[in-house]
Length: 131
Image (cartoon, rainbow, N blue to C red; front, side, top):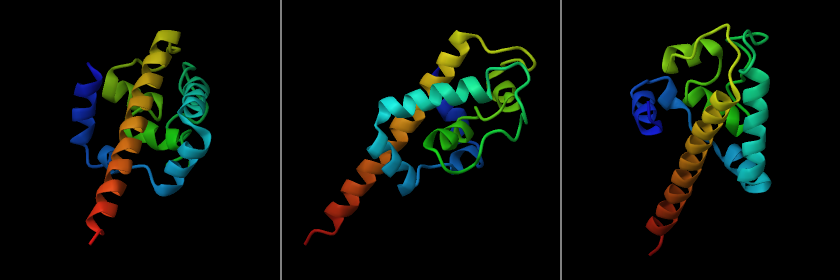
């Protein structure tokens, strides 16, 4: 499945499509930069998803806070059960480095799109206020 196909499927889910970056996450991205966010993303994927049976699987990813946590839920990459449901990644088998990198790239794609969308919305809103 291509990233575009995955994004289309996720957009049809009321739950997955309800996740968006809030101002606090956008501010965090502005302060830290996308390179740092990507490093965090790699760390979270490795620490929360890569093991065959992650600790607290199904409950290991907070639903608020860090932009990567929001992306993980929006993209169905929050636990091994969701990875299996959305992407047919088998449970109880460690993720390969290639699988981890693919997840990181997909999460970062969502984050960048969401961040840029928010910037476009802000520009449109400020332009509509002009006399």
